Amino acid sequence: MAKILGFPNPVNETSARIVAAGAVAMSVLFLVTGSGWVLVPLTYGFVARVLTGPLLSPLGRLATQVITPRITRTHRFVAGPPKRFAQGIGAAFTVTASVLWVLGLQTAAYVAVAMLAVAASLEAFLGFCLGCVIFGQLMRWKLIPESVCEDCNDISRRYASSAG
Image (cartoon, rainbow, N blue to C red; front, side, top):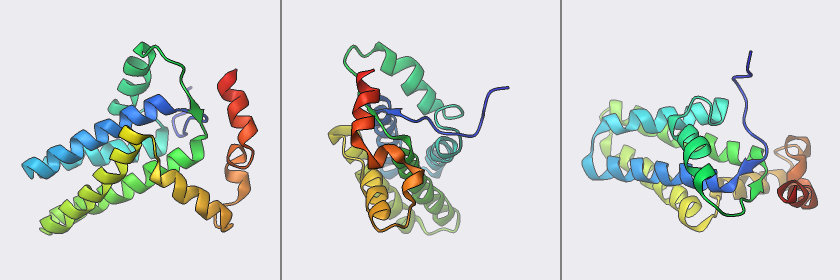
């Protein structure tokens, strides 16, 4: 039986950016249309990716199995734990936005999704993972143990895995 709960390590940066672009598209769709139904796949996607990586995420599977393999370039691989942490932040924002929407607090839901759209845009278009930066800072403050991400502590390991 395949392992269901888990997250890839390392993560293909190209796939991560494609997933972020999908999150941006859904966020903008919500902000433009005001349709609370858009929050359903947006929220589900983040929660699914935190729990299972791309396995149960339609957007994650599309990115990793369909789009990324068709992109002819050298792909860069990065540590998985910071990317999972970033997905967790996305899940927190989308769950919050969904709850706010259901409670009739539409303006607050818009703010939460707009903030998510900004962070996802940084990842999608600039390759800057805000959640990864926060993860690194929490490691420096010793709030996340070094054992959570050995590759984060030894950048040479990351480059060795990318070259191989």
